[in-house]
Image 1 (cartoon, rainbow, N blue to C red):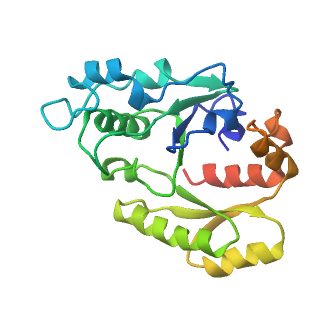
Image 2: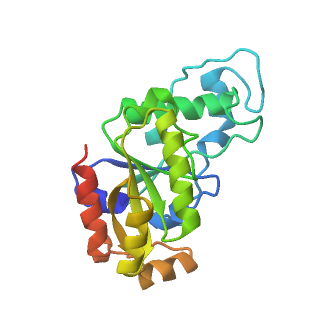
Amino acid sequence: MARCLAIDPNNKVIAIDADPVANLAAGLGISEDQPITPISQLTELIAERTGAKPGTMGGFFTLNPKVDDIPDRFSSEKDGVKLLVMGTVQSGGSGCICPESTILKALMNHLVLFRDDIVIMDMEAGVEHLGRATSASVDALIIVVNPGARSMAAADKIRKLGRDIGIKNIIILGNRVNNEDDRELIRSSLGSFEILGFLPEHEEIVAADRGARRAFDDIREAPGELFEIVEKLTAMK
């Protein structure tokens, strides 16, 4: 999706890998020879900007650190898409107040509220990286589901989490959809959702996943359904 958007030279696209198992770089075609340090592991930067050593809890540190230069300084770029890897906070529990968590939250606020970029965030099943300050400015939370009972049950839980922090536009994207039976299963099970579209199982995508590489060196060769979904999504802005 990010690569499709970046075809238009007028679009400035930032992809955020906010999944603890970060693998978006491979999906974008960024070489393993181009190492990316997650933002949460930039210990010297975090200490400089927050005034506290990463890994510490409590004490005094800046809650609104300077982050406006981070997207350009610490991103990797491929085919017009800038990638930032957020990383995870290794200490403390959910929602811990620590320097690493503070820098990640401030960065997300900056990206969503103050930059004129198209920001696409790949998250695990949840909305932990978003807060109430940014949620009102999120154009859409896209829940990717496969045609299976467990996947669709998770969609209801994620929608509740999204609504709890004020995200208004929560939509479904059907993935690995092979036939009309799959589409009808998603429609009937998630009838209260708006459905953005359906992506078919594609042999090139399967092969790329198995080989830990990006699919379609030329993104224009991707299934037409993907471009229809991107067009529909951009019309929501």
